[in-house]
Length: 542
Image (cartoon, rainbow, N blue to C red; front, side):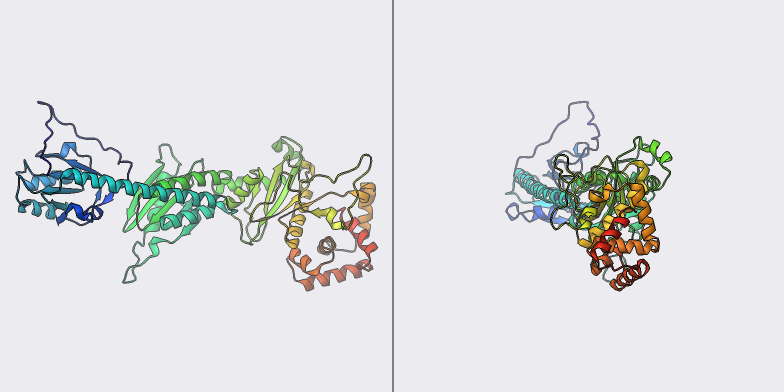
């Protein structure tokens, strides 16, 4: 065994009380791992079996309290040990994790009074055999710490990659929360400053039960909400994060960046090294993803602005926009049919370059977005002095609604089906809203990721607008609005009953009945191509 050594303070000086330093840049080592090193021959002879070691320190002072940081495995041969009970009490006050007592040359065995004191005060006591140097124990602890650090770094790296992949999904906020819950083995919740749940993922430790079927932490959810309010940035000086324990459940709360007070709250059954780092990665990602729509208030303001822009008087809207256009209206639905909340819709808006998003109407309504200065479609190529001609095989509906070229600013978004209007001046936003809805219906019916409703062009554009509109009103006068919409959709889809039913959200027999009624009211044969062409020309004016 190493020769005992005793640090001696300068004469007349009083050792200062150590401040509370940060922990080491390595994870703590469970005491059980150290005891599992058979070559050391360590044996626990008193105190609890569980402890976490942050440091190793050797001291032969009668009172080492002023020189301890907390979390140490203190190694001593008991050179100045006179009062075991007082000695152990001071170690407990300093926060020592365990005491390793070396037998010989000072003591042949571990003093019984020391064993009793450690048992009574709850300090793990290890017997160090004579053949084990203290330096060997320290070297083993540092090796175990290095291995634990390597495992932690690998885990954090894998978690970072998984969270980044989740953030690239069409529903990034729920995906990141789901992945975070999986990485931490608990529950991840996104809360507003008032404690309202925005998203949640993972199992809830509060509903887990013990062997008797009783909840392990029945009030953990309320405790988590209270903890979230602590970090919610509703007042100056709020902390960026906070932790707590409720029963056997570990609780954490992290404030997201931004002014709306969103909070990431976590509840787990265990707390492992690296959890805080993984949570920090998620906080950064969620702060960026939630930025377009920070909470219900911001989402409501944006939605209200979009609704006003799409329905208000142009004279009132123009000053808010600061320009007369062009503006592109986009309607969007999730491809899998699930509803889109404000945060998911905000992520779509960020991808398309706009913060003007309306996702708050609920029900089965589409998300509506307003894009400033977006060129939604490029005109067909024209030869000098000649208008563009329809390519062989191009049907009339291809001129009305066609997929948007990939080179344009609005591009298909994974997980979404989009319908867009053409760039429109502020005075025609209400009409563009209807055109975007029509384009979305066409895209869903044809299973295209993106479609755009284009203005009248080609031969139809040669007719003066006033005359074309008058002719359309006279021709379509017998039809009600629902019948005219059904006829327009049916013609745009080549008379396909099933696709028209999908686009309108009705049964195919309903489509047949409406089209039959249109033929009766118009007294026309809708199978005649000339009739269809004239009706399509008239419907395009609306």
